Amino acid sequence: MALNWLLICHGLVTLTVIISFLCGQWPIFQGTPIERLHHFITFGAYDYFLRFVGFVFGDKARSLVLSIERCCCDRPNPVLQVIYLAIIGATYYYIVKSSFRYIPGYYLGEVHKYTSLLAVGIGIVLFLLTSFSDPGTVKAGNVSEYLLAYPYDNIIYTEKECSTCKIPKPARSKHCSICNRCVARFDHHCGWMNNCIGERNTRYFLAFLFWHCLLCIYGAIALALIIAGRLKELRVVYILTVYYGVGNSFRSLAPHVAQWLLSSYNTQLLLMVFLVIVSLLLAGFFGYHANLCLTNTTTNETFKWEDYISWQRKLNEARVSAAALKASISGMSSEGKRPESKCKSFFRRSPLEDSQVVAKENKYDKGFFHNMFEVIFPLSTRPSFSQTKSKPS
Image 1: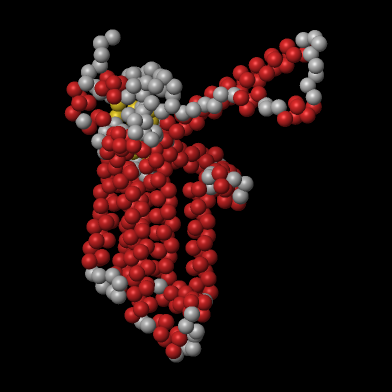
Image 2: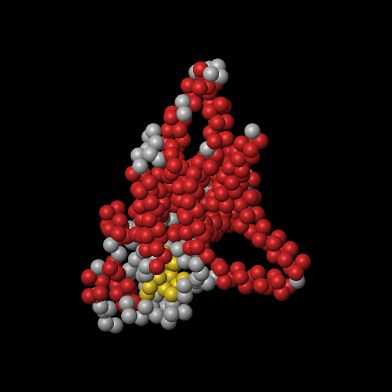
């Protein structure tokens, strides 16, 4: 029984750490232990580790750790790719080792031994496509085509030159400091793929997220059906009610069935919990990026718009405040004006409430179907792209 409680505690701690690490910055967790744990995992723990290394082993060891950090975080490296392959390989291995002997079973046919392998194989193919495909590198040979394909909106994108590549910088592009190249319709640099997500491989990235979400759901449901089948085949409920005198109700049977599952199928249960958590996280990531694609926006542009709107809002508030101050000074200097009553001044609208609302004007949002078509069939993959030429200056 102690082992069962240990497994439950392990699962709860694992769930808390994963949620804190991935979701601790969400507004819903502000001021909660989840946010503090997120800060400790992402910043505090590493800072304490660096202090410990410097105190015990000296500054040379601390410099070595920092150089390893720069190599892993600021340069292209396959560390997270290897971790992904290890996770998916180890998960599939433990599922095969612990559960395939129960297939075929009461609810699952033998075909699932092969469909599961096929599903994992498709997931790895999508991973390789996203990792090794060209994200849409902007070079001197194709920059003129990209300049025509993505015109400047003169709001968050203006005409400028990339200071590193020394070529004109098309709208929606960004120079990735990790890959050291300009990427068209830049979304973000994905460490798991060791590649940028841009114009040409966003479709593969979305397919990767969607397929792996379905893969985790498929695995969790398959494991649940295996356990349910064993429950049926071994006639556990019948034995508990007839031979042990347990009441034939959910409330009476649940503790005994749960104890039996934890003692006999704890590996399957832990795998189920892991797959459900990962599927929820992948569903959230897929939903976020799908919504961006439907509005023809990128992650990079989301931050740009936030900065622009915040700056414009502050600018408008400053203008309104200056106008209100000017009106107040002129009112004080005017003679013979009846002073405003305290009651009226209390209910008067603040001048800041009359400040102009800053709206997001996305020039590249051309409607649901056109936006999805642009993601599935990128502009640079169409025959018309290579035929376009820059207009003479």
